[in-house]
Length: 123
Image 1 (tube, rainbow, N blue to C red):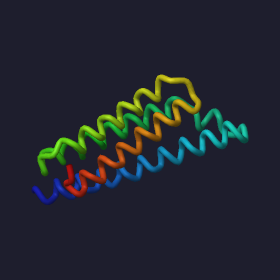
Image 2 (image 1 turned 90 degrees about the vertical axis):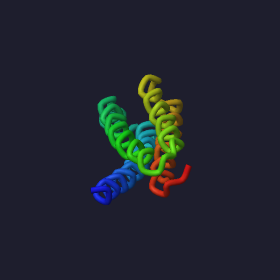
Image 3 (image 1 turned 90 degrees about the horizontal axis):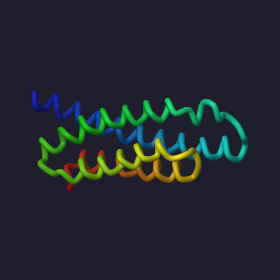
Image 4 (image 1 turned 60 degrees about the horizontal axis):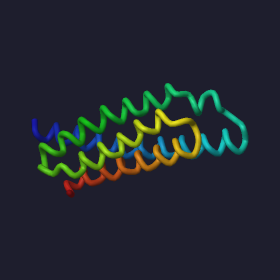
């Protein structure tokens, strides 16, 4: 049973890393396509995409990073991930633009770092 839980946590950590990367790409492409080319504003800047992404990040992060604390006893990955999720949440309440992009990319970077550290059991 313990091996199965570890495998699930590892998969969730990897999913968290991939989702963080996809979010960063989405943010950068959104700024470039909408700001520079004026394309895709309706789809790329939809608040629902950001809300769903944050909800998914919260679920994946809390489960995998929470299990990580139980497994290796280190709270640092959870704290780093929580900081990143907080920045992502703040990004939802600022207007679209460079501030939102910077907050989101900083947030997803911290979440990815947290998942990487959690995979390796590092503090």
